[in-house]
Amino acid sequence: MGLRWYHFALWGAFIVGLALLPELVSKGTLRTIIFANYLAIFAISWDVLSGRTGYISFGHPFLIGIGAYTTAILTKRFDVPVEISIPVAVVVTMIGGLIVLLPALRVRGSYFAMITLAFMELMYQLVQVIRPDLTGGTRGMSGLPTLTRGAVNGFYLSAFLMVSVALSMWLLMRTRLGTALSAIGMNEESVRGSGLSATKLKMVAFLLSAAIAGLGGAFYVHYLGTIAPRALFEINFAFTIIVAALIGGASTIVGPVIGAFFLTLLLEYLRPVLPGAERYLIYGGVALLLYMYQPRGIYEIIQQGLARVRRSS
Amino acid sequence: MIQILIQGLLLSGLYALLAMGFTLIFSIGRVLNLAYGSYLLIGGYVYFQFSQVMGLPKLAGVALAALMGVVMGIAKFRLIVKPLKGEHVPVEISLLILAVVLQAAVVLVFGDSSKILLPIIPGVKWLAGTAIPYSNLFAAVASWLILIGLYVFVRTTHTGRAMQAVSMDPKGAAISGIDSDRINMITWAISGALGAVAGVFFASYTQLYPGMWVGPLIIAVAVVIVGGIGSIIGTLIVAHIVGFMEVIVSAWIAPELRGVFTMLLIIVVLVARPRGLFGREEL
Image (cartoon, rainbow over all chains, first blue to last red; front, side, top):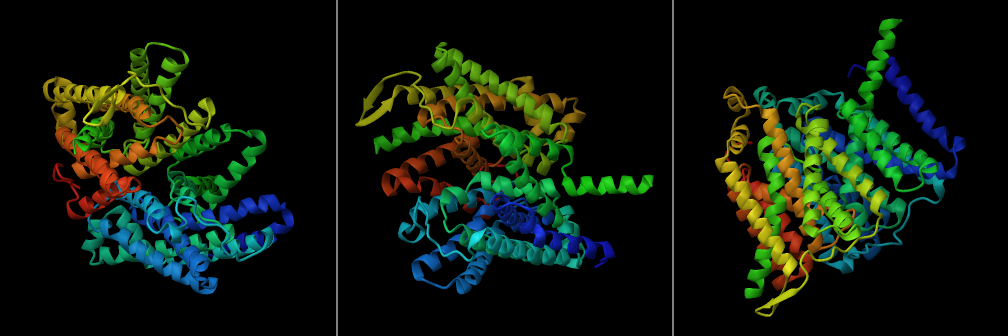
């Protein structure tokens, strides 16, 4: 896998840094970072699928929503314990991932992006209409069981999840599987030509992505304690996930984590300076300029910077 | 029955207009303009500002909205599509970010609450027990006229034929001496104007609010997928399929389900016939 000493050092430093964070920052900031952690999980999920294989998904909230709604309905309406409902949610989301896979076997590029957008919108409308007694209809559900109490515990749970997802995906993507998935993004025909089954590889990517999305969605909904279709199946939510992954650096796993923290903290630290609606304008503007300056993300900017430092020394 | 026919025709005309600008860009530049909805958003608000707040004549408001669309279209092409060299993923993502930025800008200038546009032509005509607001009728008729004009333009003028050529084969067009940059810019300008005018009509159908760009974008996506690229007539027909389906579903099944069938149609068509009903063979 080509692991070097500095990989261990950086991951170690990152984990220690996260573990010490509650001592260093206020509770309010900690709550913001909990969001950053969940956003990072969603962005990693997006990265495994879209960043790697080039099948851009605009409907990732579709997968997250399946996971979130499954566990919400099971715990709220059927009194299923959380220990069972979350694994079930992950499995159901993986089945949802297979549904998204079907069109991907036939169409590519912008068409795939459009169909995922349609899936998300379909889910948004269906959730409100079909069995509102189960889903809570337009208003959603509240009073779901929460797993932790207080910001510190919530932070540790989300950080643990995020680090385990990030580390395992980072390791997995350094294997030959990751290379093959990247190759699909570059040229699918040549992957077929080298005797690999592109369909099987795509299926693995979709299932992995769906599993992470389901896991993240399920834990997120049990952190919030509420669920509402308008907050979940929204183009702005999809936007935040995609932009986090791309601003950080697609196809790197580490990049989406950087991107999620960058975006969340940017929005948070703009708050005292610009309390009003300007905040979102500046936030989006920064994202747009940064992305247009380097479409491969902050990860690439850091690497280029490091290379420059190394060369000059 | 007649009621459905009338409502379907009115809605479909509007859908055809709002999908056309999106199809043009997708056919010619192969770019999924995710910021297409912001033409409608800005167009609607420009009309609101000039005609309703400042009291200019309504036609001037529509014209200013169209002008704004042209400016935005050219700016998008110049500032986003060209610097990124037309690469799909970066362009599409940048446009998505831009759409969200523009929504934030609208919130900043006009506030979060929704605004109601006064009808372009006040009054209602009753026909077979259906109320037809004159302004909806005007929107449908205007949409039809604009689309006929566009069809004639694309079919008969030199620029229009060059647009077709670029859409079919950019390299071949370049060899025949067509400046594809110029054609692209013209297309982005036309698309912006169509979107902005559609925005005025769409906003007078529903209402004007900062999030109103998502719905039309999804309708445009539906029409492009189902219709396929490179066909004005195809877009027109599919806009009617989508429009009538929505009217029929909300009349006979349930109004809340009106969008569901459109989404199902998209998915079925993409899985069964990825190039769309009227599209050229490619992918």
